Length: 265
Image (cartoon, rainbow, N blue to C red; front, side, top):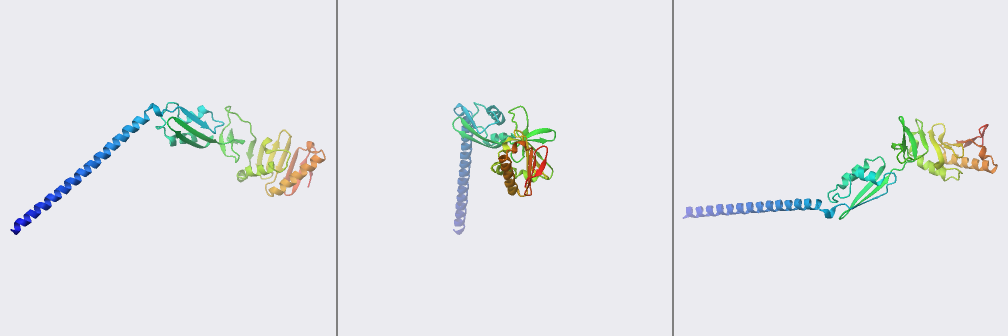
């Protein structure tokens, strides 16, 4: 009797285990089949959407571009009307546009169903500089942008930097802004060329006035004040038109009229 009971109990446990195993296998198979069906459905839906004319690009709005023409932007981005707006890779478009030496920042946004908006921030050329044997455009801190060519040609001041003064490039925008706001009757915007040197600090040649202005960078604020005071005095005495160069450094100002040079203060 006891042996029979044990045999029945063993058969029950075995049957129960088999039932649980079968139930687990069915659940696993059902789950896997569901995932496969969903994946196939999503893939089919994606292919349908990315081939649908409903999402075809109809308008590409480009803003912020000054030097780059719209055709340049589209060529760099490998975009054209009729492309599927869902299928285009936004990150790839931004990457391709940032490869242009003129593009500082870019943002591309989808405007479903069929529009794209491209916002570009271009690098602004401020100077010409020499790089090896060619002339390049450079930004306000002397960073190179691109070679000067006939396309969208712009005449800009020529910036030269003597060895040992490269550190002044980072300060150059601020120094020139302070110079332009110092009541001088001239502007750095009108300079034909600008030179950074150890001996002269910042030197500007103003072609329209035919005058050289040199300002020592050490004690910059003091040098500017002395330069302004000297020019005011020269204009008051109607002598400024005869001046060919003025140098302000170490609280002294030298004035050259082309025939004579004298210490003004």
